[in-house]
Length: 289
Image (cartoon, rainbow, N blue to C red):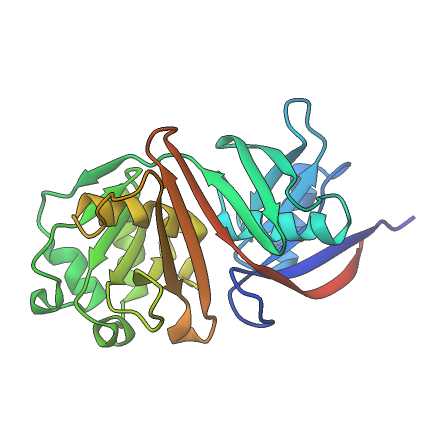
């Protein structure tokens, strides 16, 4: 007998269909790892999320790209929270815990706004030559903002600050060379290029995220890089701590027609970092296999 599995496609970090970053979400109870990987490959989105039973949290949450399981994914977690809301399993204001490969993550919902705690990133300054990466990205040194250093996050993500939205818009990375560079240097596995110039008055930065090393040339809206971006800006001196809680809002995806907005909150006393955003369901279907 064939198996039928309900699956949703949800656009995260937006309240408009066809914007933000799409993820597929379904329940994973009774599915093998091989089946989950096959489903993720069939959905062919950057991530497919699977919710299943957990002994240490409310749910176990796994994220699969079309080729492999990953340790963390922001937009697919926001999508999972929206999925649970639509299934009437997540109430207004309810706290929820997910067991993941990155530990137990705390999340909650406020109306149609979803909050996800992410691990505090390790931040360091890149002190080696910038030339190889700049060449692959097609960035001239005159386009860098004040010749600020590259910032490395979690040893596999590099943040590069350019001067303007035009500099960001006109980027033409060589993805084949960027893939090879990621293989040679772990810190260039994910590249985030950002500018402090923004489209919206109430946002702090606009970014683009390139990750051919992980099979994604450009990710539309990336929760797991926008969260650390707040601390990157703090490290570079662009965000001054005037309140007990530091907040920021970031733009991404506008140049590829997938506009999304990510809000980030950092509590230095509790050492807690949260990303948050909206989500909208665009597809409900059944997989038959």
